[in-house]
Image 1 (tube, one colour):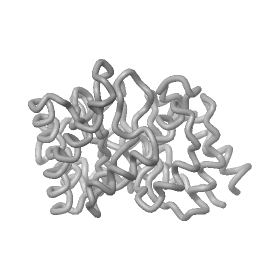
Image 2: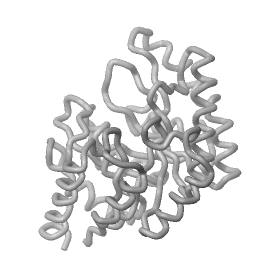
Image 3: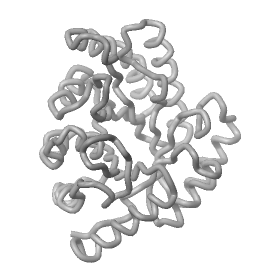
Image 4: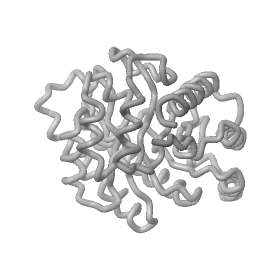
Length: 276
């Protein structure tokens, strides 16, 4: 099997010394094919970007042959909140992220489905799930209108209880939302914090899969280390995706340029010795 580096991309991160234009150039120099834009203040917050800047960034992406995807805002956002004011603000924010994706030419918007605070009992989880499904309806209507796909992402182990921790929860939400524009984004590192069978998870959600997030950890916390910096075995996972004919983006979610370069070197090594 041949590992095509153009199928991989990088997610922009806080702390990068430069704007999105410079990050596009970095992705191009690394010979990656995708860039995931995060809709956060300090990165590319929808209300902070002018129409002219959107046109400029879209042109830069096209000139560098880099395909964008968008990660919807998730800091201070919770579509599953038990607080109706928080849900309302979170839903409005998601609409702005979808519009930005459309303006940049991105076809995928990754969404964290929300969580139940750890202080609440587990029996409040069904209400959080109902809140999320209700809150996402308007976003799905807009996504269908603009030709954008919303990809629901599984969450890492933490004090708060996310809505998606397993393939069953992933598929149950996809079924409940019942929209051709609602699909799956699978985060490998997040699933690893639960000790899950990564290939088994991928196989179950494969018919709905449109994006994969790659980063490493030791299984205890969501560290977002470079590939090879934890205990995840990426070679069999990437081989399985290749054999299944998955052609969507594989996004490196790192926290530094050095970690991105280290992950690229890791991919070069396994491409040469395992896939070539």
